[in-house]
Every structure is written in structure tokens, then in C-alpha cells.
Image (cartoon, rainbow, N blue to C red; front, side):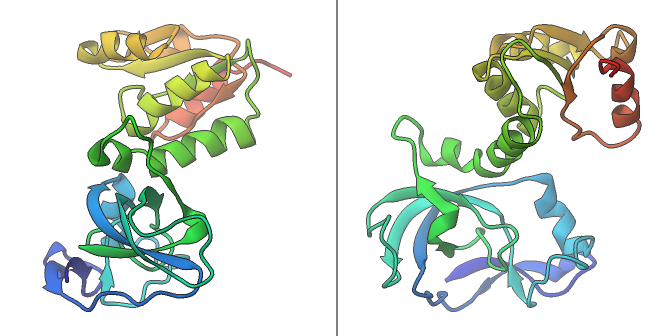
Length: 229
């Protein structure tokens, strides 16, 4: 099968499409025929070797994190899925890859594809969805009426996190460029700062939580808008 393979860490010319063997299943895994793959910043960082200390890939390795597709085979211990099921998953830290004709996915890492979304739409969800859920629901334990600052509201995580925060009953502040102000408002953002015109830390006040996903000094500035204890 065809796959996008990383030969060794470093330069971009060490990544190329190659013919590799179809992966073999373990008892608790499913084999997915990939229909669409979602790309995230981490997929560009991994080949550079940045995550080598804690993500151990056996090179050459198939790249790609988020996928959507159809179950082709199931391991003999799998109970939640059957061949023909449409599923999606994130497998970036599992040593396998999504950028291939077929991908191996642990049963507990997959979910059924929402029937109202196509494969491309579904493949865009896993990593940003998990990041948003873990941060806002599991870590921040966001409650109705609380205020959360989600910078870069028009980005991958931002667009998902704004909607999730509103679903949880929170009020949302965000930053974006002039051209995306209407977009983030349509997603539910209550306070929108056009970062080309204003500094968010000079406008926003008394927030309960910050979703820190933007590099640079944004996190440090975000501390200024949090409620004092």
C-alpha cells in the first residue's frame, strides 16, 4: 500500500511516499481504509525530531495523526466495531500513521463517524476536539456562566473550542484578525478582539480560564486578564 513515510529525523527530503506492507492487526485493533486525513501542526513538527524524547517512532515510520475511514478488518477481541463501519480516530502518539491507504487503530482510540458529516469534515475533528475537551471540560472544569479566553479563535482548536465552551454554558473571549471577526462571532464568541487593532490584555478582564495554545508571550499576557484569587 502507499504511505507517507519518514525515513529519518531532520530535513524535509527524508519524507516521501513509499510502498509498504499493509499493517497487521493485534487482537484489540481495527484496520481502517483511510478516506481522509486531518493535518495538524504536530504533523509538521514530528519529522524534525522535536518530540523524540517522549514519542518513540520506529523509523521508517508512517506519518499522520487524524483520520476518518471505513473499517476493513477487526481483531478477534474487538467488540465495538465491525467491517463496514465508518469511524474516525487520532493516532499521533501510537507509533503508527494515518497518511496511508490503511491504518491500524486501537479499538479504544476510535469512534463512529457522525452521520451528518462527510469523511473530510470528520477527519478534521479528533486532535482539536480532544484538546478542547480535555482542556475545557476535564482540566478547567468549565461551568455555566464562567468566562474563558480562547486566543486565535479562527484556528483549528479555536473554532472547535469556542463552540464547545458555548455548549458548556460559558462566555467566550477570543482574538482574531479583521477578516475573521464575523466568523468567530458566528461560532458564539461573546468578546472578540481584533489583534491588529487592539491588545486583548488591555480590554478583557475577570476571566476564569485561559486556553493556552498560542506561542510567544500570549500566555504571560493572558495571566493579566484572569480573576484575582
